[in-house]
Image 1 (spheres, one colour):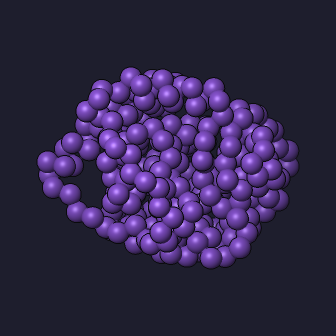
Image 2: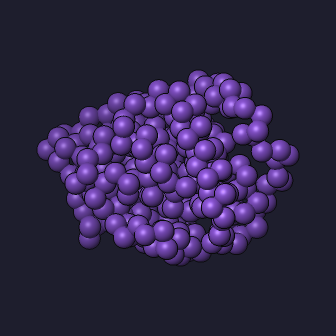
Length: 262
């Protein structure tokens, strides 16, 4: 299971416009070479001066690449301002943490663009009392954003080293309202169901029935659906009793949902 590689063309154009608007000092250069080295992300330490610089970059990203691209939910905006994305990327990509772009995190996986994270989170219409299920933990960034808004977050990762390192990282950062599980997200987390919101950061070719059944009455699910490498659509699914409504949020391109434990 994995997160977004590239947005659909209209979103991509908006992202490129936003990045072009950033001052030169904000853009890291040169771009480091991608690596598929399967090593968990370490826990680097940063000086007060570095943290201050990252905070300024994060604020600029939110202004240009989040608010500037139409995100309006105050809770989502505040979460994006607060969560330090540079702590969720490998050391070689720390200088790129506040570009509005996906970045590799090892094991052939990536951390989603901040804009896409904000877009999907806003679509969930989270409330402070909500219990949320995430499919595809990765390095834990999306889970941290969710945890800033919702009461409880349950997140599943199919690659064990990523699950273990994300759990340790989130705990070290003080997120005591996040629980990480290693397993196949297709089946959800039945013991903790129902969920007020479910977010899926990888694309199955159909909506998994277990996820539909684990959605609470009045619950919302955001999920990309479509064939690997083909046209996929991001759907907002809402449950009302035994009925489900769907709304398209646009075309996207996610990597497929992985079913093999690693």
